[in-house]
Every structure is written in C-alpha cells, then in structure tokens.
Image 1 (cartoon, rainbow, N blue to C red):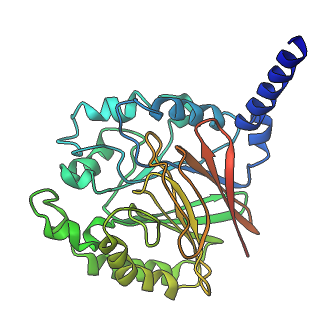
Image 2: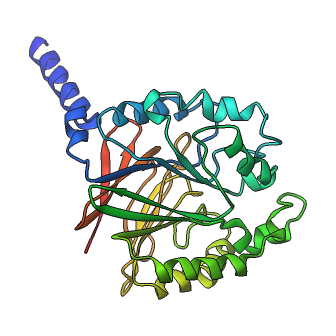
Length: 313
C-alpha cells in the first residue's frame, strides 16, 4: 500500500509538472517583440476569467509584452450602455488589475459589443489610459530590437449579413460601410513593409463551429480575397468560437488562428479542412517575433503552451 501511495504521488507530481510551466520556461519563449491576444472575456470574473487574468499578469512579469490585442467580445452579453457602465469595472478594470497589464490594450468590436453602444467602446479610450481604440478599424506598428510587427485591427460584424440585417439586435452593424473598410485594408496591406503583418478581427474566415455557415461564407467572400491578395500577411487571428484552432489551407501562406475564450470555452471542437491543431481549453495567446520567426503560443489556463504556430520567413 505504501509503495502504491508513493507511486501515485510521483504520478501526480509528474502530471502537475506537465500542466503548469515555470517562469523559467516562459522566459525561453521571449523574442524581440512580444504581446498577448485575449478575447471573449467578459464574464464578470466568473468561470476561468479571473484566474486567466492573474496568469497573464504573472507571465508578463517574465515575458516583456508590449501590449494586449483584444479582438472582440470583451463584454458579454449585451455590450455596454455607456463609458460609465459598471461592466467596465466588473469585466475589465478590476479583473485585469495586475501591474504588468497596465499597458496598451488594442481592442476590436465583437458581435456582443454590437448588441450595445458601440460608440461607447471607442469613447472609453478617453476614460482609460490603457484602452487604446482610436477607430472601429485601425493599425499599429510595434517595434523593438530592430523587429517590426504591423497589427491591423478590423471590424468584422459589419461584413456579415446576419448582423447587418438584424437591426433590432445589432442596430449599428448595418450602418457601417464595410466596402470602405475593405478599401482601407487593401491600402494598408499594399503599403506595409514591416517584418511581419498580422490582421486581427473577431470573426473567423475558417473554423469548426456550430454557428451559422453564412458567417464564414461572408468572411470568405468579402475579407479573404484581400488577405490572400497580399503576400505579406502572415496570420489572421480571431476569436468568437471560444476554442483554439489553427488552420492552414493548401497553397495559402496565411496561418488562420482562432484564439480561445479567456473565460468560458466551447470544448467540443473537431478538425476541418486544413486544421493543424484544435483544442477546447480556455486561455490566451502569446505572440513572439524576431527577424526570422513569428511564433504564436497557445496558452491554457494552467500556463502550459498547448501548441505553437511558427511562421518563418
């Protein structure tokens, strides 16, 4: 019995060592440019949101991140009503309170923000020193150690007819000129000369999901031709589906990545055409770049790297 107990303890220690990586292991991930991707967050700290937020802070003590990219649905379920909505505190400020997370957050609008006051999400930039959303779609360049990464943030709900046509639930979606946005995106990508170019939006182009196929159909018809036209786009990163997925289509050099929810996941996920990896865990992503490699590490709620997308020159 004693021998059995010892064996069980050793097995437990082994399992724990696999599940939780150490700061020393996290430090090895760091490159010249580093930032987080976190989305589908707002659950008032419930489920896995607060533990993951604390993990993000602890990891940032080791890995020097430049910013947090937040591609949509920071607020569930009906968005926010104003810049003074209490959800700003319970979904965001009091949750992501670690000192290392007091840096620029670059958000996009998700479908849940479109259920509320979308202008208030932009206007919160004038309230919070770290909420940096200058427009519904915009671009930022991160540079460190001689490495440049262009982040292009887009507004995807207006590209999808499901949202445009439901004026009662998503009153602002149909008011946006998505053709004008796509022209802007085409122009930005045409002139981008950075080492790496990443486009981020809330909705996927490709994914396994029970959501309406029309969503991906509209994204494939409207957004994807511009992404594939420009050979400098390395990754398209999105959320919305609440699990991790990495998809690469034959003959296409773009890595399509679905980032999981930072609070509550949808664990049922399976491979589709082009799937390289999928997992139903909660978590966030750490993106690290140097001159030769762009790495996107999928991190689960225990701090373990469950998969890495490596895009090389």
